Figure 1 (cartoon, rainbow, N blue to C red):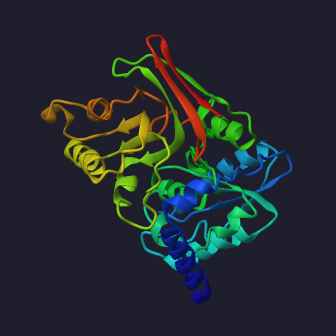
Figure 2: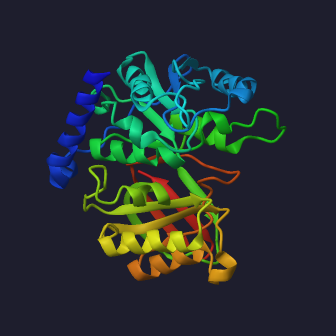
Amino acid sequence: MKAVTIAAGLWLCALLFAGPAAGRERPAVRPPYLHAGDSVGVVTISSRTDTLRRRHYEKCLDVLRGWGLHVRRSEHLYGAAGGWFNAPDSVRGADLQRMIDNPNLRAILFFRGGYGALRALDHADLTPLRTDPKWLAGFSDLTVVHYALRRLGVESIHGTMPSFFRTDSLERDTSALSLRDALFGRLDGYRTASHPLDRKGTARGVLLGGNLSVLSSLNGTPLDDDRTEPVLLLLEDVGESIHHIDRMLQTLRRSGRLSAVRGIVAGDFVRIRGEKQWGETAADLVRRLADELDVPAVFGFPAGHDAANYSLYMGREAVLTVTESGSELRFL
């Protein structure tokens, strides 16, 4: 474990001292899309799984097998030796490392979120993904992984995770199907209906962002985004207080981290406390931010912790067009 920890420290330092200019000069690597018969890894590096739901979780993995994929579980996927986590930080990092280093795996799917990914990344080296790229997919706490890959220069997928798959419902699991389409290269973009808070306009930039709480916590760390090329910023969150949402948005704006934002994709803000007393919703606060930055913004985009969580290519250039009749997010 010690060797892994040292390597992880070196890769983080390399990212830090490479500087923003080096990042801009190096285009993002796009992993190969999947095909039937490919193998994928499933790993947990955030909160532990609920062992009482193991039968359901196995059905979730069967969904992946139904897509024609071979599934390899991480050694400690169902572990319970780490308190809040399924295993200690170093063990979770090592689980991820084995999948990164396995040339037979073409994607790594994070099984669930919660908290803890940042701690596990201290014990994993992502740099092999530059030469043997594979898709890493997840959301929420896994926003930190998207930022790490952004600094490394590798595209990733913001989307649902296997533990969220619907296995006992007659309804189509549009979130899971969206993840499948993203993995297999069938996703060109999305069109959405108009929303009262939409701010019209057209913008082009690299898609970045994710969970507001996580990206706010990265402010000033080696994983912070400090590049200056145009950005389309995805924002979503769950279970926060409205004053905390305001604080995070204020901090991001005042820190200068939003100077490269050219457009905003506002996803779901679910179970936000105190909106009635505050007099505004979280979406209202994001619209105010869009006004201050003078950028187009689409609201009600189905990404985040609500029922529909559509997959998005992070680190890829896209065009956002917001009109009276609706919006389009198109990947380039």
